[in-house]
Length: 138
Image 1 (tube, rainbow, N blue to C red):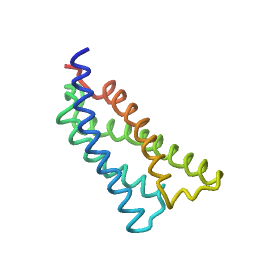
Image 2: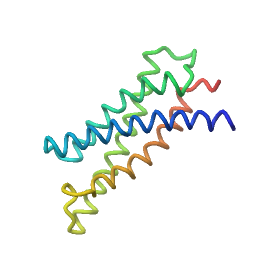
Image 3: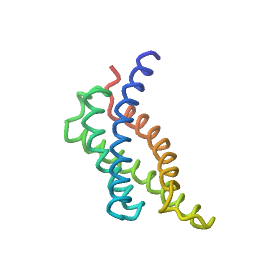
Image 4: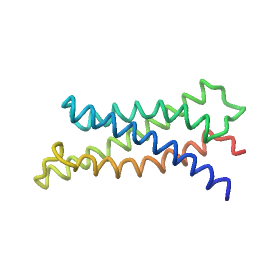
């Protein structure tokens, strides 16, 4: 159990950095470039995923001998795409909920609040799916 907690802690550090990248790119694209927040969230998610792959497979998870690096990356991408789908569903649901309540979702903290919730949900998906399908468990 102690190893799992230590591994989750390392995952947390990598995740915090990836989240800072994700939110930084999101805010840059939306606030500076005027991009739609849902589209910006998809792009920022993809940018942070690249960092997350490199850092996670180097510092958090142990490479499985039965997986080639290309297969490992392909699995990581598939799991991340599922995470992206979860992220986007949360962003769209938040946009619909706030807009139907008469709130200007795109011009305030609302899209960021939704992004925080989406990030928390995707974090658990990422850890447990990667633990199951990518980690050698050593």
